[in-house]
Image 1 (cartoon, rainbow, N blue to C red):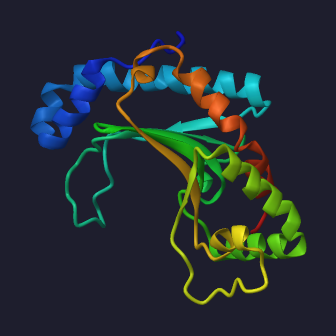
Image 2: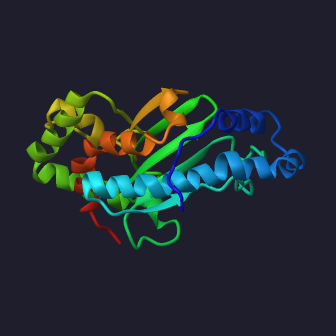
Length: 224
């Protein structure tokens, strides 16, 4: 597989167009454009970014790329296609959709720009319970990780909160993490020049170096 050379302006155009023409007839007429401007560049990005991650961080991760088709069986929104695309980098040997409950790195491209970072697609209550126990057992260790992230300043913590989890007695900086049902640390950018160059994988891997301690902390938590 050839290395990633950058997206093109046509990539962004395609995402806008599919948002405005989200139907099978339009997609059938533009499937070649989809492959050229979105699918193939994303395949090359996944390969190149995986190589950069391994080189810069030592993490040898598998990847999964979103399909263009949406699962609309249980959704009120019956639009058949996504107007975005994402790739996640997950633990090796994680099969199927199991990665959704494990920490992953991710990059998502939308018509407005891109989001990247690390976290969970979804979590199980048993995992978050184990996470809280780990934090309680050595709060200073997790506090150090959180403070390092805050000093870098690039990533914001997002996620829904439990209403009845008591974080009293914990230091202030780790309380927002402790009460989460799920979470991710993300950075959101607009349509920038870096998207259209082969330097994007290197830039993302460099940014993610600072997330490795948190990723490893979370990866160590195992639940059935």
